[in-house]
Image (cartoon, rainbow, N blue to C red):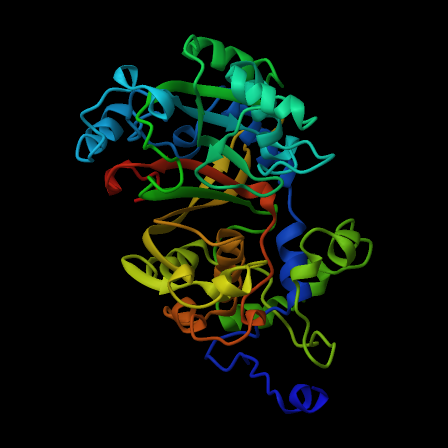
Length: 427
């Protein structure tokens, strides 16, 4: 056994791809990501969840509002697809036995900073836990009795389109719930969930759908949005190599670790387990870029559009069985970045931010956050246009940057019809 361990060779990725400047190390990337006014982003998402502002207002564009009437998630379209199945011509109300159940599609909006993620976990304040507790009233008598006999709380089962991590906001998360109870009304479900934590969790819509509908397996695409706030001295444009030499401003002078409130997060925070250090334990002393170009990030991300690729190198905390083969492949429909400004009543000029919009048929765990952080790192280093594509061939996840903070990430919506680029925020 020991001989097997000694003979096993680990091939690690080294950054030999050409770039104008030296790439940030893991620690430097982490510091660059976290030393920002994230609270302003959290406040903005809180206002979006409660309906006081919208993403379209942030970008200053006119786009269809994210509402049950105009958003491309329509129950009639789901039913139309159901009609093509062997069960499509049989209405639920005409069925008996196990076919007589009612299935409801619930569209939720929640503020990520107020919860410990979606997935229900003992002792934690999760979205799933609150939703399922609220649905307990609508559980049929047979299931309620079974739960009581097992000394379990009477709660409903909510199936979701995609589990969000702690701190990640959702504007139109889709989940479903089914029951054999006949007198369940849509408005009652909406009122029950809205009464759980007002201002933090809100129901956008509730509707009865075909029993074959599944929020995850029926989905054709998901859309994520990331807001990356810029500091006062950053303008979203990168200087040339000669200009950087004249400035004589080192990375540590702006993002150094001395006195940083984020050092503790780095040393023992949620994402610290995902960080991979250099074998020699050193972080380099060469001058590093202290800013990046938003247009450069946009160019890097556009190279991913229209391609079916394995994103295993951008994933974190995945099972071994999902590290190879088709389970790691994702098709990115849309990947763009642009500049915007968060307006605030306390600050007339607002905060300049970079907005990233990603649409794909699926996303791996923490894939969006790693992709955002890596694209920023590669843009700052002045890497070539295909830098992200070259990283797909890496053999070690240290090739990518540590995940960007969850505070900036938002699950915008989930699509059950074919993707239409006209519905994108960034074009």
